[in-house]
Length: 344
Ligand code: ATP
Ligand code: FE
Ligand code: MG
Image (cartoon, rainbow, N blue to C red):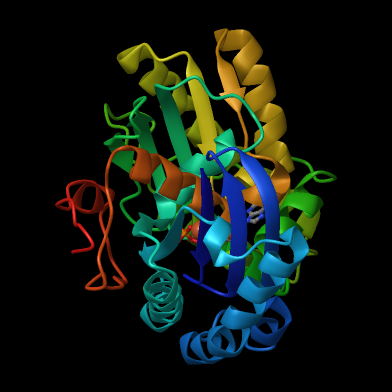
């Protein structure tokens, strides 16, 4: 079954064709990274406008690259939330147009369900799994069963992990997007240079909190700047990253103990982090569990993951109609419980 996936929730305009939720046939992504870098972050209005000009181009290109047409597609899956509303609306409207023109089913996909599904593209995932979602807007521990149903164990109470990376990068004067730059500097820094806090570790909860860590970094830097001390960015990054990873690993360890699940999927943009990938590899050996990361290219936003999640959703018998809307906020459990729509 071939699904056309469309993703426009933030600053990437992406279209992909994926067979059976696991075989990538083609993907085309137009990134706006350089445009937003000039502003130090994504400007929603600017992002929507660029999606409008790119959306049909990326869909046309993926069709051309794969020598396919809408006739070859079984369904059209599109991110309907959460994300930037204006950006989401462009993808949802385009998907409706393609669905209407082709008569093919339309499936609204939750962006985080997409990040989770990314792990099963071109690799084997034995559901049910425990999933650690670490992205720009989310930090969550979920269980995902074999019918792709989610249950949330815990989530961040304030900043997401990716958000904390981006904020720390900004404090150090690193250009947007900061996460990958912090990752790089952390690899050559001293992780014991600063003793940053590990929030909520003492408490019996699967929730996370990263805003205190970000403030601790800010306070340390301010203090050093006031004293005119030299700041070694590599050490700040390494110490910050160590604090993030410690918390992620410990909460994952507890979730494994509670759920008994032995396979862990790490999903979202921060799953691209080299320090986290290495730490998780050692963790997997020590805890005797399987840890699966999506291939690097499927960690950050892409349409292949939306096509994959759309496939699972469609296999459950779910389909949306042309009343599908876009939602800036969309709890996973709300999306999951949506009534089954039919096209007629
Ligand atoms: P969400 O998926 O929660 O809606 P988003 O789509 O903006 O948010 P993603 O595309 O999943 O987020 O990931 C982007 C985030 O991942 C950014 O915060 C970015 O800094 C972070 N990120 C990307 N690569 C790395 C890396 N190597 N190390 C740390 N963080 C990274
Ligand atoms: Fe994302
Ligand atoms: Mg992005």
